Amino acid sequence: SDLDVTAVDPSVTLVEHAKAHAKMDLKTQKIDYLGGYTVEQLAQENSKRYDFICLLEVLEHVTDAESMLNSVRSLLKNDGLLFVSTLNRTIKSKLVAIIGAEYVMGYLPPGTHDWNQFRSPQEVEELMARAGMKQIDVQGMVITKPPFGGQWHWKLDETDTDINWIGTYKLK
Image 1 (cartoon, rainbow, N blue to C red):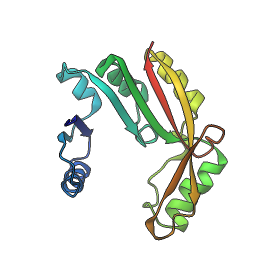
Image 2: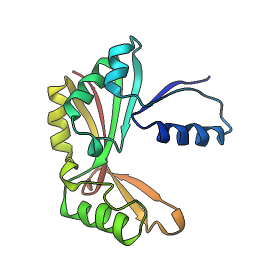
Image 3: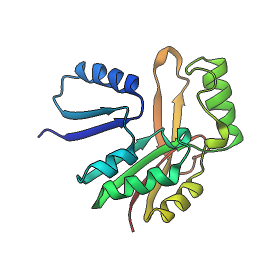
Image 4: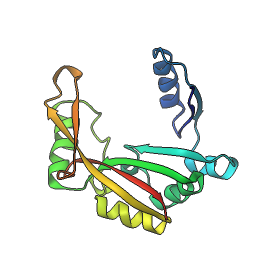
Protein backbone atom coordinates (compact mmCIF):
# COMPACT_ATOMS: atom_id res chain seq x y z
CA SER A 1 0.00 0.00 0.00
CA ASP A 2 1.19 3.51 -0.77
CA LEU A 3 1.92 5.85 2.09
CA ASP A 4 0.48 9.33 2.16
CA VAL A 5 3.40 11.50 3.29
CA THR A 6 3.77 15.25 3.72
CA ALA A 7 7.31 16.65 3.90
CA VAL A 8 7.65 20.20 5.24
CA ASP A 9 10.72 22.40 5.42
CA PRO A 10 11.20 26.17 5.52
CA SER A 11 14.02 25.73 2.99
CA VAL A 12 12.91 25.45 -0.64
CA THR A 13 16.42 24.25 -1.57
CA LEU A 14 16.36 21.37 0.90
CA VAL A 15 12.96 20.28 -0.35
CA GLU A 16 14.22 20.31 -3.95
CA HIS A 17 17.12 18.07 -2.88
CA ALA A 18 14.68 15.75 -1.09
CA LYS A 19 12.51 15.50 -4.22
CA ALA A 20 15.54 14.62 -6.35
CA HIS A 21 16.66 12.03 -3.81
CA ALA A 22 13.17 10.48 -3.68
CA LYS A 23 13.22 9.99 -7.45
CA MET A 24 16.22 7.67 -7.00
CA ASP A 25 14.17 5.37 -4.75
CA LEU A 26 12.46 2.49 -6.53
CA LYS A 27 9.50 2.50 -4.13
CA THR A 28 6.57 4.60 -5.20
CA GLN A 29 5.15 6.79 -2.49
CA LYS A 30 2.90 9.76 -2.58
CA ILE A 31 4.94 12.55 -1.01
CA ASP A 32 3.51 16.04 -0.84
CA TYR A 33 6.57 18.32 -0.61
CA LEU A 34 6.05 21.74 0.91
CA GLY A 35 9.16 23.86 0.56
CA GLY A 36 9.32 27.32 2.08
CA TYR A 37 6.69 26.16 4.54
CA THR A 38 6.70 25.74 8.32
CA VAL A 39 4.91 23.29 10.59
CA GLU A 40 3.06 26.26 12.06
CA GLN A 41 1.75 27.18 8.59
CA LEU A 42 0.73 23.57 7.94
CA ALA A 43 -1.22 23.47 11.23
CA GLN A 44 -3.00 26.75 10.43
CA GLU A 45 -3.90 25.92 6.84
CA ASN A 46 -4.48 22.16 6.97
CA SER A 47 -7.28 20.23 8.67
CA LYS A 48 -5.56 16.91 7.99
CA ARG A 49 -4.30 14.87 10.96
CA TYR A 50 -1.36 12.47 10.84
CA ASP A 51 -0.67 9.02 12.32
CA PHE A 52 3.04 9.77 12.64
CA ILE A 53 5.11 12.93 12.66
CA CYS A 54 8.91 12.91 12.56
CA LEU A 55 10.99 15.87 13.71
CA LEU A 56 14.40 14.44 13.02
CA GLU A 57 17.42 16.63 13.76
CA VAL A 58 15.20 19.73 13.82
CA LEU A 59 14.83 20.89 17.44
CA GLU A 60 18.43 22.05 17.67
CA HIS A 61 17.83 24.45 14.77
CA VAL A 62 14.54 26.14 15.69
CA THR A 63 14.20 29.35 17.64
CA ASP A 64 10.69 28.70 19.02
CA ALA A 65 10.39 25.01 19.89
CA GLU A 66 7.21 25.58 21.90
CA SER A 67 5.36 27.08 18.94
CA MET A 68 6.50 24.26 16.68
CA LEU A 69 5.51 21.54 19.19
CA ASN A 70 2.09 23.10 19.76
CA SER A 71 1.55 23.04 16.00
CA VAL A 72 2.76 19.44 15.76
CA ARG A 73 0.39 18.45 18.56
CA SER A 74 -2.55 19.89 16.61
CA LEU A 75 -1.53 17.86 13.55
CA LEU A 76 -1.40 14.49 15.35
CA LYS A 77 -4.33 12.09 15.38
CA ASN A 78 -5.51 11.19 18.89
CA ASP A 79 -3.58 7.91 18.75
CA GLY A 80 -0.73 9.36 16.67
CA LEU A 81 2.96 9.23 17.52
CA LEU A 82 5.63 11.91 17.36
CA PHE A 83 9.27 10.91 16.88
CA VAL A 84 11.92 13.49 17.77
CA SER A 85 15.66 13.06 17.33
CA THR A 86 18.10 15.73 18.42
CA LEU A 87 21.43 16.36 20.08
CA ASN A 88 21.90 16.41 23.84
CA ARG A 89 23.66 19.41 25.39
CA THR A 90 26.69 17.68 26.92
CA ILE A 91 30.43 18.23 26.71
CA LYS A 92 30.61 14.94 24.78
CA SER A 93 28.14 16.21 22.16
CA LYS A 94 30.09 19.45 21.78
CA LEU A 95 33.30 17.51 21.16
CA VAL A 96 31.77 14.99 18.74
CA ALA A 97 29.01 16.86 16.92
CA ILE A 98 30.54 20.30 16.67
CA ILE A 99 34.32 20.05 16.94
CA GLY A 100 34.56 16.56 15.42
CA ALA A 101 31.86 16.63 12.73
CA GLU A 102 32.13 20.29 11.72
CA TYR A 103 35.77 21.26 12.22
CA VAL A 104 37.87 18.07 12.23
CA MET A 105 36.08 15.72 9.82
CA GLY A 106 34.25 18.36 7.76
CA TYR A 107 31.00 16.36 7.58
CA LEU A 108 29.03 19.55 8.16
CA PRO A 109 29.80 23.19 7.45
CA PRO A 110 31.33 24.96 10.48
CA GLY A 111 28.64 26.80 12.38
CA THR A 112 25.86 24.34 11.50
CA HIS A 113 25.12 23.77 15.18
CA ASP A 114 24.81 26.01 18.20
CA TRP A 115 25.54 23.91 21.30
CA ASN A 116 23.24 26.15 23.34
CA GLN A 117 20.33 24.94 21.17
CA PHE A 118 20.97 21.27 21.99
CA ARG A 119 18.39 19.77 24.37
CA SER A 120 18.44 16.94 26.86
CA PRO A 121 15.70 14.29 26.92
CA GLN A 122 14.48 15.82 30.19
CA GLU A 123 14.22 19.31 28.66
CA VAL A 124 12.28 17.96 25.69
CA GLU A 125 10.01 15.96 28.01
CA GLU A 126 9.18 19.27 29.78
CA LEU A 127 8.55 20.99 26.42
CA MET A 128 6.29 18.10 25.41
CA ALA A 129 4.33 18.27 28.67
CA ARG A 130 3.67 21.99 28.10
CA ALA A 131 2.48 21.13 24.58
CA GLY A 132 0.09 18.45 25.88
CA MET A 133 2.17 15.40 25.02
CA LYS A 134 3.85 12.72 27.07
CA GLN A 135 7.01 10.72 26.57
CA ILE A 136 6.72 7.03 25.75
CA ASP A 137 10.36 6.12 25.18
CA VAL A 138 13.84 7.60 24.76
CA GLN A 139 16.85 5.84 23.26
CA GLY A 140 20.35 7.04 22.55
CA MET A 141 21.57 6.88 18.95
CA VAL A 142 25.14 5.64 19.09
CA ILE A 143 27.67 5.34 16.27
CA THR A 144 29.16 1.84 16.36
CA LYS A 145 32.03 2.41 13.89
CA PRO A 146 33.94 5.54 12.85
CA PRO A 147 32.08 7.02 9.85
CA PHE A 148 34.97 6.84 7.40
CA GLY A 149 34.06 6.79 3.72
CA GLY A 150 30.57 8.12 4.42
CA GLN A 151 29.36 4.87 6.01
CA TRP A 152 27.42 5.57 9.19
CA HIS A 153 26.63 2.65 11.49
CA TRP A 154 24.14 3.38 14.27
CA LYS A 155 22.47 1.46 17.06
CA LEU A 156 19.89 2.39 19.65
CA ASP A 157 21.09 2.34 23.26
CA GLU A 158 18.76 3.17 26.14
CA THR A 159 21.72 3.92 28.42
CA ASP A 160 23.66 6.37 26.23
CA THR A 161 21.85 9.57 25.26
CA ASP A 162 25.02 11.67 25.64
CA ILE A 163 25.25 12.78 22.00
CA ASN A 164 22.26 11.92 19.81
CA TRP A 165 18.95 10.57 20.99
CA ILE A 166 15.45 9.83 19.75
CA GLY A 167 12.20 9.98 21.68
CA THR A 168 8.65 8.85 21.07
CA TYR A 169 5.74 10.96 22.30
CA LYS A 170 1.94 10.82 22.21
CA LEU A 171 -0.94 13.06 23.17
CA LYS A 172 -1.78 13.14 26.89
